[in-house]
Image (tube, rainbow, N blue to C red; front, side, top):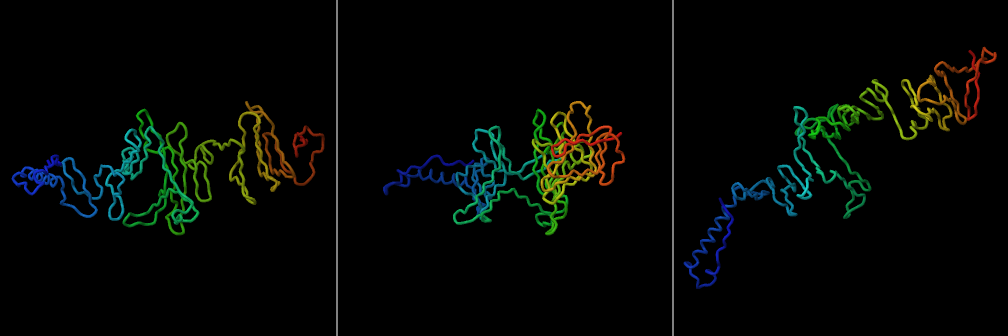
Length: 383
């Protein structure tokens, strides 16, 4: 096995004209031996442009390799590149802030096992270890540097960009329908062993809705979350063009068929359409208050639209229900009008009478209290 020379020949036997060859024989032999050792350590048989020397500990020699393949030493601030100015490393690249903790960034192959299948990703993995939070940070500037403006002057645009092709790298084509454009996924390790589930429990995913072309580029975005006590992500929110669907999976939420759902707010919940537009309920609208006091349902209008038209308003109130206290109040503030075509309150039914005279003019059985513009009024009723 070749070894790097460790003994240097003396120059005292060859320093003057009077020194003889025979007297310098040992030093000359040492110099030749050293040269031979150096030659044996360098295999230069495949030397060519853009190739580098890499030490092979198995043979104790330096060999010529392509670019930086097999490079394990320190870059020491040097720039390594080929003729196209690309840095090529034919293996995973691992960058560590130091060698005293577990933090690292890895670029290369990443494998995810889901059941019997293993999926290969080309990935950049940020591992914060136990010492820090992993982070992708994009930095942009609005100004001009060294006389060169940004791609679009005055516009900042840090971005995550996904481009998906149909076909193959050698023969790209238009992307078809129902193809994923991009997804953001997350899951938490489970069980005491830290097993990673095969499916994400949270996902934001964009999917094409038609074959892509210069005039048809339809897509939709789905937000998927997992309900407490379950393990399968559901379509919670669907965004498609000018339409928003809540609980797109159906079932127990708003828009579903499996049970009641809830839209909740920490303060007022306002449904507000643009001026001249309307808010439509295509099916039944049920407004209900939760158990307790000081809960109310208000259907009102702003000062620009003074009337509320209710084609079929049903107010259901059970004063005997546990935990519910209060009154049913139908009121219209300001100069507005409440126009109920039909109001049904349990056993009390109010119907509008646009014309005509009441047929019963006898003494009423009782009165219904109505508050108009903050003033209490009484409407007679007959049995």
